Amino acid sequence: MNKTIKSASLCALAALVIAGCNSKNANNAEQAEEHVKVELSGSGASFPQPFYGIVFEEYNRESGNEVAYGAIGSGAGLRNLKDKVVDFAGSDAYLTDEEMKDYEPVVHIPTCLGAIVLAYNLEGVDNLTLDGTTTADIFRGKIKKWNDARIAALNPGVQLPASDITAVYRSDGSGSTSVFTSYLTEVSAEWKAEIGAGKTVNFPVGMAAKGNAGVAQVVAATKGSIGYIGSEYAFAQKITSAAMINACGERVTADEKSISAAASGEFPEDTRVMIVNSKASGAFPIACMTWLVAYQEQNYDNRSLAQAKGLVDMLQFILSDKAQDITTKVYYAPLPEQARAIARENLKKIKYEGKAVLQ
Image (tube, rainbow, N blue to C red):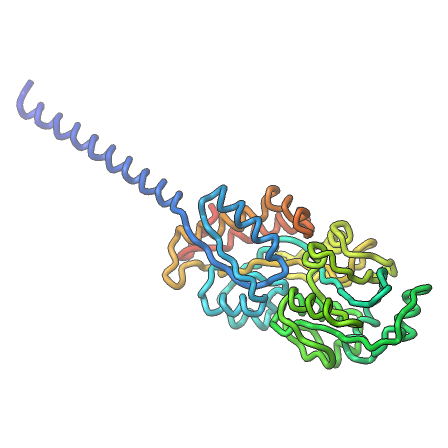
């Protein structure tokens, strides 16, 4: 073979080998990027903590990614997101249009359904019934005694004591407070005008306590008291809570069926909707949805693409059948398929350097 031709052939072969190696290395690098294990952190609502604890452990087993979540209250969690010290915030109250002006664009991803129930400590009364306006007037301080005529009318045949009522409310910024006060605002014109709704409000009477556990402890220790707590906490701790008269005039207790009924309506594209005082038959009136809130643009505070992918992957998992099946095992209710479908579409809004993370 001519030396020139032979030399050219060897060079061509070498070029192919190098190209193949470069291609293989590029593929390996791409695969390595896809399989980088990441640590995610979030903080916020205490209401969904039992669900998140199990779901995040299951996600870790499946993906290798670790998720740390601090149940410090919805308000504090959202502040941490605002300060960009967490990957996501948990909240039982969505950010309002006004609140979102203080944030870069976010997505709200719903995770499960639950309810706020009224735990009470009333000796000899196991089946208390309340309605919205009566509850509002208890927490306004207008109904002061348990044997008040309005409470008695809702509980015929029940021996109600002539003792004082002590209302117990959350001291911390809380999504549970937002849900509860949103309900009272819906059913009571006086509450709406005087107090309103929010993660923190100025309750005119009663005692303050931190978190679901704090409210439950105060109620348990205080005869004649009543306080609002997450349904999952009440169910798990076997805490007695009141039945409620819903918008259809039905007496209902909080359970998976009545909570799910409250979420049977239409959902907006951003999933920001309260489901309190639902007009659906069989609905528990203080039902709620809880969200994980994250920034749409994930390239901030030296975050990596791998972290952004890990966040989206975790959110996909929490919307999966496997994760939603866990809800009923820890006293929640699963999201309706409509809400899950909208949430999956919203995951496509999460980007890294302007490019959608979910392809």
